[in-house]
Image (cartoon, rainbow, N blue to C red):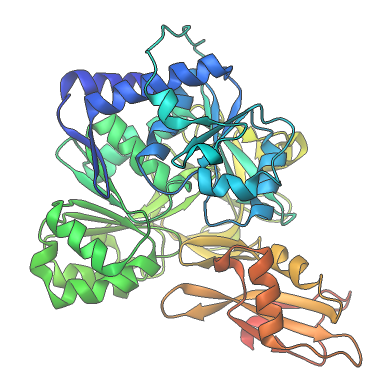
Length: 506
């Protein structure tokens, strides 16, 4: 299964139908297919081949869509990079993935020149004048070239993306995802579970560089539906787009939902085109779903538990919400779930264990193929096709899954994953800091916010603003603490480990 063939089929069947809308740009399926083929030809002439990595550091927009699909046509792996990351964070992703090509904006290239890695042989820039193109090729040049006859891809040239997620060591790991992974999840399953089809128009409110954003692009390619992309989420603009673009499917994290629901309740008529709301990123609050359904009686709100390595794991249908409060739903079709204790032995229904998931051979259906260039981490995570999620949960007698705790100490803020150790390591760089513990603090808008507890060295002084400013310089904005609390001594267990459960209680 190849995404480029799905796109070409849509271009043949509905050439003039809208495929992608972003800002003032609108592009049909025929136009998208043609531009993707031209771009793939240009990248091939540059030297990009099957198995190469192509890093995409672009904001939400049609160029991101074109570049992702063109790399897939060549059998290359895209490395989607959230444009909100700092240059230092981007450098880590580039150093780890060793891309052959980097596609970014001219204005971002000015700073990324200092952090790029030796593997990058080709730089392609979107926008900008000639003064910005030193050592780079303009994207417009590749898009205006001839469509070349490209070599046929081997059937097993299926890897298409390296999506980074935080791992147990606190350093991001690259999950290698295949075209089969995306097509199975967002072509087949989304049609079965949510009845998605060519008449739908989906609004993307999150970064395309995240798996959820790419999922909506694959929906467009597989179902022939239109996708409307927001460069950046704003409540007023989202309301305008839903009304004027006649959006039928709205994907969002709870933070977006909390910001948008008041506008929905204030003027429901503007949102009358909606039929489906998809909530993910954290446990979608039942009260929030009920507010949407109350204001828009015809809308169905689906909540689902997902992760980068798998995509959808479990989903909660609207009719099951009241009877299973706190649940993330039943396993999606094609997913097996089992819970095991520390010894790997399956626990009884109702007992807590680590969540393992399986969906056939890794890379074939829903589960990732491997962690990029990390054989030991892959071996630890995957055993006989079972992926150890690192999350603790329990199953009730009807097969509904409940998340009990995050084994990996992940903080979910506004739909973004923040690994506490990454923030702790940055705060420890400050000479005055003796120890630090980072946890998630309940937040009425973002679900959780990052909270840091700091123990200073004897005789040292440090302010909350100094800690936050240091993190702002070193980390993406959503990762910096919103609250810093200084304690004479952090609570520790018998072996000296900081007790985060006590920090959460504080």
